[in-house]
Image 1 (cartoon, rainbow, N blue to C red):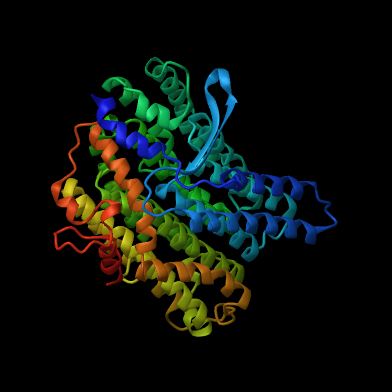
Image 2: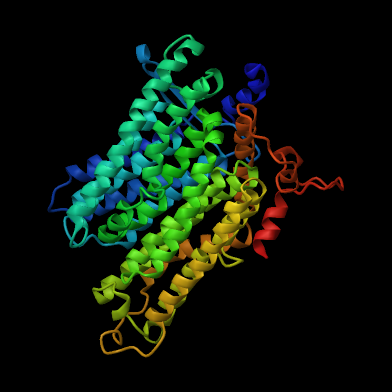
Length: 550
């Protein structure tokens, strides 16, 4: 019965979409790896060559990700540009890559974020190993977002730990070794559970598939796990993703890692690395174990809401500006988990969009906080005052980014939170109501921090605060452009995200006892009805753009 009802979904998910002779997804991984090796092999006496190779590698990877966005077929909810090659045949492991609307913009964000970090941030010492680790980190993040094989995903998921450990430990601040070790131990602890879980998943699924396979699509569509078995396997994966997000109470490594990491490390950590956890819940948690995800949803919704409120309250009490932004991430990521386990199309679409929005807004905040530290050699809020008078352009840029993080209408943060809350209200009403308090608290701690840092009369130390430089402005400009564009016109993103989310929601509903609420149809429609004008009550993709821009 299950196989019959899910056949259309399986066909759609397995569809390859438009194909390219050029292996673009493979190159997204290979280019930064080759760049990292070449950078590591350059001579110390040629620092200009080191930076050039790193820039060429990262910009090439970014260009490939933008090309992928251009060639991606909107309205197709299946995996596109798939590449599958046998790797270890006897174990059923393959080099299986693919991209859909859920992963597309995370790939583009990764491709754009790394070259901006390399161009705009100076490591101050040992540039050669710093750039090599940064490029290796990019390869690991890219591989995680495009892997459709469980074992391959685990390899890339683990690869990212090593570069980030060395970036924090080698180029961080006073307590960098402690923060790097804590980060590594926490994430390795979670990954140990996932390794056991993915091996058990493949082994148990062998009875239904007729052979051992780690292929994500084959297992999700062909295996039928017993309820208790699926729940244990789901939690094995969920522990790793919960640590990576991180979800309360597994979040304690994040503020230390952010505070002690170099600026580029904080930008990349907030921008894309934390999304490996939220993306993992969607791609592997809900897709592989829908029954277990629905069964345990109350737990995740509760932890998400606690994280939203707790993160906001603790952020309000921070004295360090960078630590304040770090705790704001705990709150914002709670919204993404809330939308994920609401199981409605608009809530999950909002979660995917908010992953990108958080990467842009919080990444920009860490970039600006890093500029503040470079100028004043302190991040203590009590030591910063009146910056707006001496650096009005810098203050204006900080204000726009801060307002986007708050979720002001017309900027990108509002769109994601709006979709998450309105979608969650249908299936997780009281959790959504409590979560709205987090929106108010976000305005409180961010506006209060801005008032203390930028308003008032500057003292002698802050009177010489340097204005935003042209090079810094060019690095910040793409962040500001994305903030405004998505806030005013989110339709191009939602047109590509929603079809894949609709497929996932259908898959969850068919494989569990979850019922998609009827009221959801007035907010979310199948891709083939976009732009219709038949006079019914169903909205279209334009509804998202219009509502988001108000």
